[in-house]
Amino acid sequence: MKDEHSTDRADEQVQFSAILTPHRSLGPNGFVIFMSVITLVSFVAGLIFAMIGAWPVFGFFGLDVLLIYFFFKLNYRAARSYETVDLTESELRITRVTPSGKSRSWQFNPYWVRLFVEHHPAKTVRLILSSHGRELVFGEFLSHDEKLDFAKALQSALHSNRGIEN
Image (tube, rainbow, N blue to C red; front, top):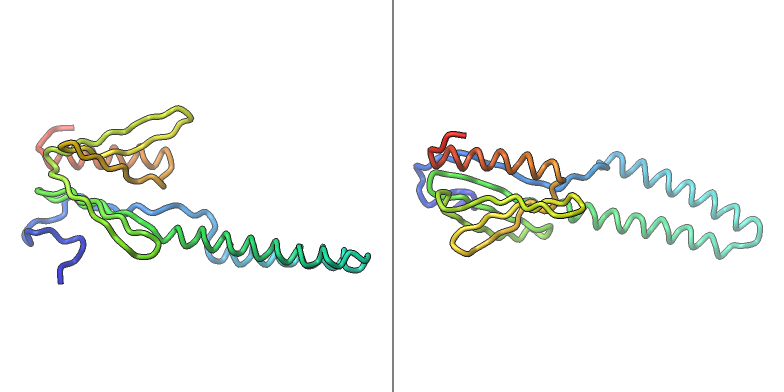
């Protein structure tokens, strides 16, 4: 069975390799602390409403906690996606893995592929690989600065691969 990151030529070494992952600012421990605080605050507030006779409000506070939990879990599920970028002498391969684990790969000839950094109003940037009429937008979940830094690194690797001085 062939590894998804291997090339057709076993003797080729990877010259550049990167794994692009979405950033999540709240780690697992932070999530537990955050949910504990939200639960405690909602419970106390709901208890106060129940004691003054507005007991149905207590259920809405519980519903809020469940909705916050549900949407954070969706967010963490989406964070399982990633993209790999592997460059060998004869191939540039981009592999995109979805949160469900399904992967799709695109291969480009590193001599012919061109990397474009497309700037848009509102300070957004898109990274585009183009070759022979095919285009691939990748790294969409990276921040503005991360896209620019990655574009410089990949462009440098592509130039080195082609024997072009930077």
